[in-house]
Structure formats: structure tokens, C-alpha cells
Length: 241
Image 1 (spheres, rainbow, N blue to C red):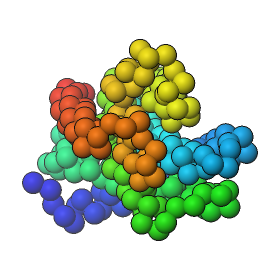
Image 2 (tube, rainbow, N blue to C red):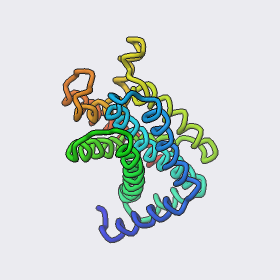
Image 3 (cartoon, one colour):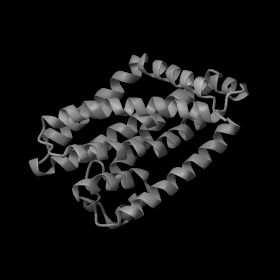
Image 4 (tube, rainbow, N blue to C red):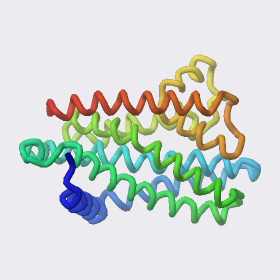
């Protein structure tokens, strides 16, 4: 059972802890924005602005979730805070949900900043499309939160930033967030189906009819399955940490 009052307090603590860490906040917000500005705006064709915005928005939002869990959990594990949380009467789900709230809030901040850039870069989406894309990207942070949790529980605090980057950057490239996967060899295109970021991208791109042509429900089913599998593995790992 999750106590509502303590959950709110836990979430508030996580939010304050995250946003007071300038060493995390500044790079995590500026990096995806600059990346999008440089590759998604300056060097993109005007006909691809919507496509590039959607994929780079996903890139920025999932990165916040992945780093928020991966690095912070590794630090808390090293400092003994994780053991204290497990020994306390507070439900472990409360701890994880509070971290999800913090990651979600930070992802929304990144989404707002990137959307402001998009407004001045030729992106032409309706309000409904805009909100739907952000909602899909936000839901897509859930499997990345679980993946970040697995990384944070598996490596040291010193190694966590490097390992998260080793997961985050190839994951973004191979799932087509930077380049359309149709430019890759056929084997790599099929490999993308194993990556949650590919399915998040296809679901979001369905709002502008720019998918590869596979049914939306198929991407949704695969993504839900992957999210549940990652949650199950992360839960086992958390209990053993």
C-alpha cells in the first residue's frame, strides 16, 4: 500500500533534489536542445521539420528519464540511502513512483524548451498533434526509467554516467531517432524492433503519418510488453540490491 501523504512528500523531496543539482539540470536540458537546434533545425530540410522535431523530442525526454534513474540510483546505492529505503516501512513502489514523478517533471521541462525552439524553426503541428506527441513521448519514458534503474543498480556511481551514455546514445541512433532506419542495412532495421525507443518513435510519428507502415497497435503491444518485462526485471534487481 502507498500512503498518499508520504508519497507526496517523497515526490517533493525527489523533485527538489533533482532541480537543485545544477550539475545535472543544466547539461540534461541544454544538451538535447542544442542537439536538436544543430541537427534538427540548422541541417534539416524544411519538409522534415515535423519529423525531426518529434524524434529529437523523444531523444531529449527519454534521456532525462534514463539519466535521472541511472545516475541518481547508483549514487544512492553507493551512499547507503537505497538500503535505508529498503529497511524502512515505506513501500519500495513509493520510492520508485516518486522517482518517476521527478523524471516525468524533468522530461516535461525538456519538452517545453524544445517545443519553444520548434515554434521558431518551421514546425507546423496542430495543438492536438503537439499534445499527443508529448503525451506519447512522456509515456515512453517509463521503460527508459526501468532501464535506467537497472543500470543504476548494476554499476557503481562512478561508472554510471559513462554506462548510461553507452546505452542512451546507441539506443537513440539504432532506433532511428537521429537518422531514418531505412538508411541502415536490413539486419539493423529488424534489430530496431528490439528497442523501445523505436516503437516510441513510430507511435509519435503516426500523428503525422510518417511511420514505416506497420500497424500502430503492433508498436503499442511491443512497447507495453517491453515495459512490463523491464519493470519485472528491475523489481527483482531492486529487491536484491
